[in-house]
Length: 256
Image (cartoon, rainbow, N blue to C red; front, side, top):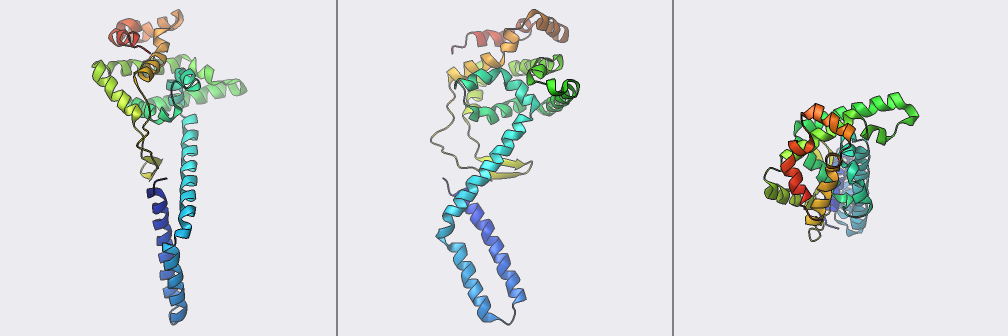
């Protein structure tokens, strides 16, 4: 384990010990012997290597808590669930590693900009309405199959396709994004902690993964039934193959 995280915890603890010493100095004026003993104890605690394992363990536990909270957030991320739903089989059979999920969500945000937040709110609202209507009969499949969710999915996919006008350049950029390993974990909008990363083992994401990812992601448009195609035409004025044909041609030629 890298030392940055545990060292951060040690420094934070030392600040607390220094504050304790300062408070004791103010309270124990006129007791030089006691203060000298306390000062020696605190300095020994701050420098002691006996606490190294404690700080390493505490840091691991902190990261575990953060990761669990982020996982719980993803479970309530209705928009994210919608977008990665068709990738499920690839995660289950090991074609894709779930560790790239944060990078996938970052990709959606980079493509959509502020609309990512808007779609997120719309999806949460839709889930709430479906749960209110269906009660205990609510299922995520009911959400995925709703007209409103499909429209959000289709709008996002067409935006993604539009961002790939320069196929080779965008493909290279996307693969590098998927190979990226974050070195911080978000605790909130303006708070982060460092995480230990083995830079010798980046995420493996090659052409095989790229093709499998996008063919699964766009399967709702490439394997669309007649009813959905009619809804799509009413919304977009044409069918997917005419709207994003160039992208779909590249995708069809992509070899897994």
